[in-house]
Image (cartoon, rainbow, N blue to C red):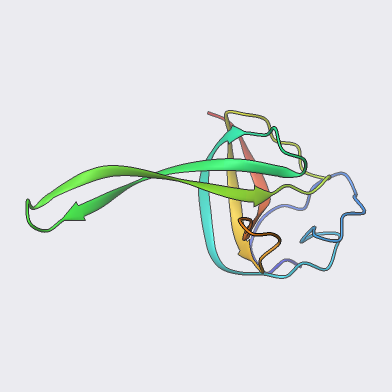
Length: 106
């Protein structure tokens, strides 16, 4: 249905920007991270950590990035939850991802 292997939410919603019940197509990257903020309306901030190899020193450094993601009405996620986000068309100036799965608390 969405094009990726994730379970469909149990509840329905009328959000047009929902990949399950609306018309929003997902494509591109699928990332995982931890929810750090849910204060904005229908938007969460997801922080993901990764390692970057520094060639000059032949070592890895730990980095993190914050991603703004749209959260449909049918998906419930709080601060501290691990979520899976998928890339979509730009929804606003900073939102280019949508939440497709909540993995649970960290």
